[in-house]
Length: 179
Image (cartoon, rainbow, N blue to C red; front, side):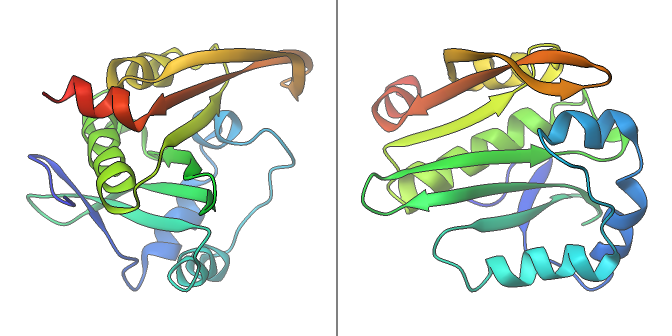
């Protein structure tokens, strides 16, 4: 469930916060990741995010690591977990440019969806993404996410008002696609 061919979902390792703190300054990583104020996080802030998640029923945070050498390459989360509605929101990020567009995101999506649907028994996993983040949109749709709608001129981004698209995947659709 947690290990694929090239990547695995893992826990926070000592020192990961330092990596995330230094990687967060890549504008191609942090800008498309947030629809609100971008805060500079310290290594301790990053550690706190992962440590608090380990004790939460509403958020699950994993680090993403390469299988071959256990190196940290990103994170993936399920947040705002609703027990009653069996739904949650997905977040994913690969801070280093050299780790993007190598299939790691696609494999990570497969692992986190397996966890969300088969372990947490989620009915619906949703996410929001900027339409110009074409690499992410392609990965999401390939994983089975379907666009549910658009919030027009929702976010002030790089000096302009831009749309924010909303995608979701349902458990029954995901299970059917795996048969």
